[in-house]
Image (cartoon, rainbow, N blue to C red; front, side, top):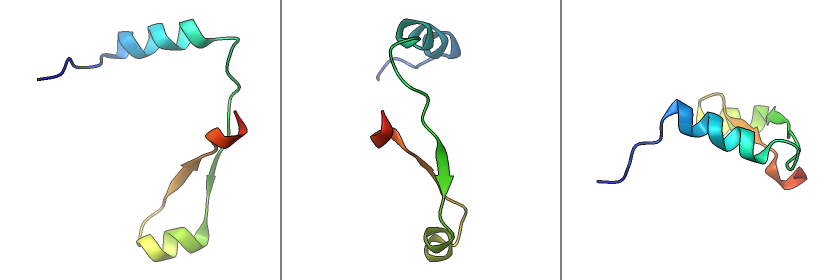
Length: 48
């Protein structure tokens, strides 16, 4: 079974990449929401 990622692991990773990566926006799409029947959030990592 793979190791479980903890909150501390995520915090440590965030500190390691701080100052290197850009914060990217989260957007929504009414069309995608309608097709999925749910609210979908898209993370724009293509702007990295």
